[in-house]
Each structure stands twice: as structure tokens, then as C-alpha cells.
Image (cartoon, rainbow, N blue to C red; front, side):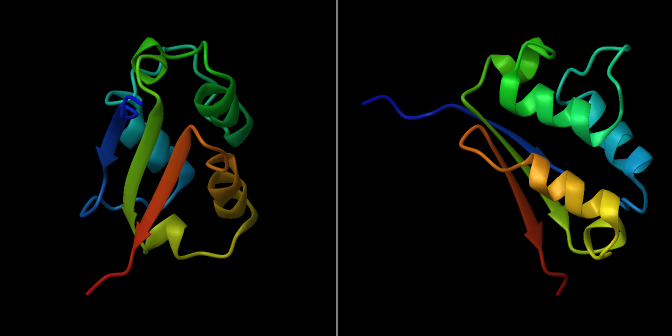
Length: 99
């Protein structure tokens, strides 16, 4: 059985205080098009349904690493929705504790 290919986007050390910061950070490495919706529903479609980003679509799994700070430390609705968008076999969000 062939090993799954992974697109790893490591955002550790990068301040991500808002969802806009997140979209700015993942846009280039994930090959998001100009018309990308910059919301959690569009992100869920991009990483689960596919067909939006040729970069993401060319890998089996997307893995995004972030620090547990800013939006990823908050308990706000947007942060929860973003975390839920990563559920599934094709994507993984890894939140690292700060040392």
C-alpha cells in the first residue's frame, strides 16, 4: 500500500490573531485562488470536497501546524468552526503548546 502524500504547512512562530491572519498565512502555500471565500465554509469545501486548490488537490492529506495562541487559543465561534473544518481523513490541524 502506498504511503499517503502530505502537504505540510507549518505556521508555528507566526502570529495568527484573527481568521484573516490565518487566510493570509495559508493562501500562498495552499495555492488558494483570488476568488477564495476566506471563511470556514469555503475552507471546509477546499480541504474536504476539493476542487478549489490544485495544490491541495495534488496531495492526499493537508496538515497545518499552528501555535496555541491568538485565534487558536481563543474559545470563540470562528476558531471552533475553523477547527471543525479540519475533521476528516484529508486534513489535520496540529495545535502546538507554547513552551
